[in-house]
Length: 339
Length: 204
Image (cartoon, rainbow over all chains, first blue to last red; front, side, top):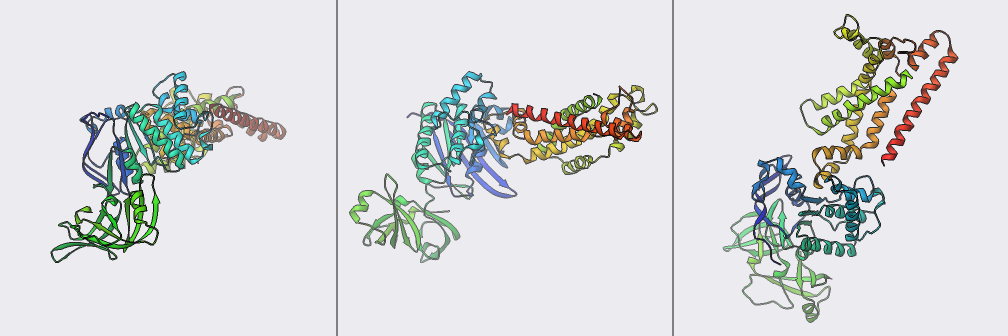
C-alpha cells in the first residue's frame, strides 16, 4: 500500500517526569499518517506515557510535539481541535455509567451529530466489535472483555484520524483478539486511520504494525527486547564480555560496568553439535519449552539464563527436538544489543 | 406555604452558586485550596442563629444594607437559608467530584470533549452524590428555625414558616398543633425528596 511520506506527527527532545523521576526520554520520533505503529516494552517502560502524550492528553515535562509540522504547545487553542480528530482507548478503559448506546454515541453527541445518525453509527460500531444488539445494556453489567470491546467501538464511532489503543487485547479471549485485530487492520485500510498500539505482546506488535517502537526504561531501543538480560560488561583479553553471573557472551561495545543486553530470537542459530563459524558466541543449553505460535516455533532454552529462540516448524521436526534435547546456540557478538 | 417557597428558592440559589463553585475548587490547583475546603467543611456546621444574627445586623435599619428594607421579609429568610445551604452543597459536591474516577476526565477528553463538556460529563457521572448534596442542603434549611425566626420575624401569613409556627405554638402550650405541624413538615420534606429522586431516575 502506498503511504504519504510526510511526518505528520513528530516528537523531539521529549522528556517526561513523574515526581522528579524521568519515565520518558526520546530524542526524536516521527510518524506518518495511515500507518500502524506498535509501542512495545515491559511494564514501566513508558509505553502508556508516550501514548497519552501523543494523544494530547498529557503535556510532557519538556520537549516538543508536532502535528502537521506545527509545534502544538505553542498554539494551545489548536489542541482541542486536533484532539477531537483522535480517540484513545485507555488500558482498563472506563465506560460511563449509562447504557452501551449512550457510551458509544458520546463522541457523536458532543459533536452535535443528529440522533438518527448516532443510532445507525452505534449499530455499525457494535457490529464491528461483534456485540450486535447490546445497545440497551447497562455499561456496569458488562464483563471485562465486553467493556473493552465497547470502549473500542466508542473510540471508532467518531471515525478518528488517529486511534490510540493501550493494551487492547487485555481481558479479551483469543477469538476476540483475532476479531479486534481485523477491525484495527480494516480501520487502517478503509478509513486510512493512523493507529498506535501499546502492547507487551511482541508477536502481536510485529504482526499488526508497520513499525514497532521498542521502549526500555523510557528510551527507544533497537528492534528486539526479547532475551533481555541485566549484567556487567568486563574487558577480558581486549574483548568485551557481558556477564550476567550465570551466562557470558561476547559483545561489541565501548561501554563498561552495568548494562542491559538483548538478543533478537531470530538471530540465534540452534544446532545439535557445535558450529564452527565466525560467530563469537556459542552456548550449550537444554530445551525447556516448545510452543507453536502459528507461523513458527518458539523454543525456550536454558543456557545459564533462559533464552528464547525462533525456528521454523520444519527445522523443529528435522532436528527432532523435544523438551530436554541438548542443543548449541550460536550468535554473533554484533547480534547482541547493549544499552 | 412559606416554608416550601423560601427553602426551595434558597436551595435553588445555593445549587446555582454551589455546584459551579465546587467544580472550580475541585478541578483546579491553587494556593489555599485545602484551607478553603476546610473552611467550607466548617461552615457546614454554621449555627443558624449566628447566620441570622449576622444578616440581621447587615439588613436591619441601621445596618449597611438597611435601605433595602429586607428585614422581616421572605427575601431575608431566603438569604439566611442560602448562606446555610451553600457550604453544604459546595463541600459535599467537592467531595463528590473528587470521588469520581479520574479516568472520566481523560476518557471524555480522549473522545474530543471541550472543557465544559468534560464538566457536564463529570456532573452526570457524579449525579447521585451531587443530588445527595442538594438533598442534604435542603434538609438543612427546611427544618431550620433560628435564622427564619430572626430574619423573617414570624409574621402570620407572610414570613411564618412551619418551623417558626411550631416554635410559637409550643411556647403557647399548643403541643398538639405543634406536633401536627411537625408531621406536616416531615411530609413536605419527604415529598420533596421523592420528587428529586424521581427526577433523577427519569434522567437515567
